[in-house]
Each structure stands twice: as structure tokens, then as C-alpha cells.
Length: 308
Image (cartoon, rainbow, N blue to C red; front, side, top):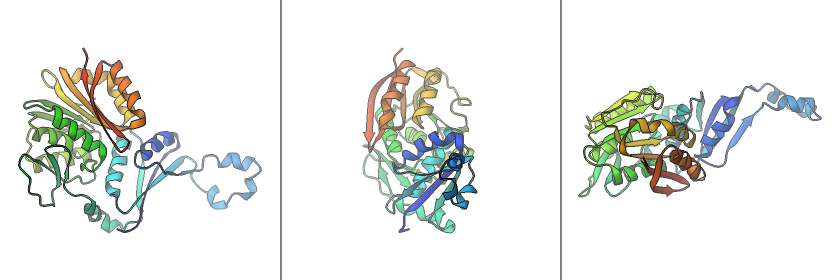
């Protein structure tokens, strides 16, 4: 592909602000198609000048587009958008314009190569051959339609923090697991019991397939509306990852502690830098204390321990 790809997302009008917030995480330059104010224009001095085609537009929905340059993977951006809207429970129609549908399933693979996320972890597409150096831990991935290939900053930042804090025998919870990449990373780092959940059944299926691909039998997957159907373990989880979006993490803040071990570690990301302080404040109000953080290209990830 040598042309820019337009990712266009259409949602009911009431979700406009949330959609713009999610899309701005992909790119700050948004094209917004919102025809809800046409009636006001009709009632004003410009009514006679409005094109008939505009009058026929659906005023109950809004569309927001971002444009992905040739050197970036549109599939990764699409997966990110799809996952965040799913977590926010926003019904959406997503279109990728500028690529032939029959090429889409394979063309995105050209952007996805082995990537080292920390000192040891290397995320490798299952179709790539990779010879690990001494001490490297290979995590094989086939993300399909789920978010999580290791190329997005939020995934890499979480993987770095997992590498820092996972200890052999830990129990790990991954909320909003996408491709299952973080739970599989934790298992490869020595976690003995990993539960990866997502509201999207397709993501859960893909996460399970990736767990099998990596021979990480300690990874269990399940459909869950955030924590509603998440499995609890005796003594609580030592590590919890929530690579979602700031608003959802803030909403989860009062409830996560019930799933955690007394000295458990919470790793959060999917947070733009501008909202890091707000998110950390909400978590601190719920009894968490920030002990470590990572930042990259305007994204924030934090590691917090329960302060009680």
C-alpha cells in the first residue's frame, strides 16, 4: 500500500465527544462530519445556500475520520479504535477507505515485524522467523482483528512494566485483553495463573488461540464486561493490567482492589499524557500509590501498589 488510509467511524450523535477522544489517541488531525446543526442553518440566513445533498444526510449520527500515512499500520490503528469503543460500549460502524477489501487481511502484515519491548521480551509475528539471542523471551502473536501486536506504545509500555514486576508463581489479571499479548507475556515471565478477559468475544477467541500458539497453558480466557465476570483467585492477583482508556480505568478504580493481593501491583495504560494526572488521582483516591511510570510519544503507563 502506498497511499494514505482513511479510517472512518460512525456512531450515534450522543457519543460524539467520546468518539473524538478515542480517535485523537490515533491522530490529532480529525475530520468530523456532523450534520446535526443543519436545522439551525435552515432557520438562519444561510438556508437557501445549503446544498440539497447535505439536507439528505442523517442528523442522528456523527462520523469522525483519521488518515493513516503509508509508513504506519492502519490495522493496528483500527484495532486500537475498535477495542477502545468496545470497552466504552459505543456502537460503531468502522470503515477503512483506500484499500481493497480483498487485500486487507494480508496487506497489514508488512508493518508487523519482531519488536523488542524491554530487556528480554520480543514480540514476534507467527509468520516471521526469529532467532532469539541469549536471554530473550519470544512471544508469538497473530492478532487477527484484536488489538495488541506490540507495535503500539501502550502495549510496549505495559510489557516493559510486566518485565519489571512479574515474579515466578504470580497470579495475573488482564482486563481488556485484546489479542492476549500481556497475559501471555506475564506467563512467559513466570506467572503461574493468568486470566485474560475482554468484552469482545472475538478478542477472547483470538487471545485463547495465541495462548495455545505460545504453549502457555496457564493463560485462561473469558468474556467479561470489565470486571463483572472476571475470575477471582484465592489470595488475589499479584499483577493486574488494564490497557484500556482513561475514562474506563477511572471507572474501575474503586473495584480493582477486591481482586488483588494485599501487595498487588496494578499496571495501567491506554492513557494519553494529558490525562495521566487525572487518572492517577482517581486511583490514589481508591487506595493506590504510583511507584513507577513510563512515557512514550504522548502515552503514559503507570505501575501502582495498593497503599493499605
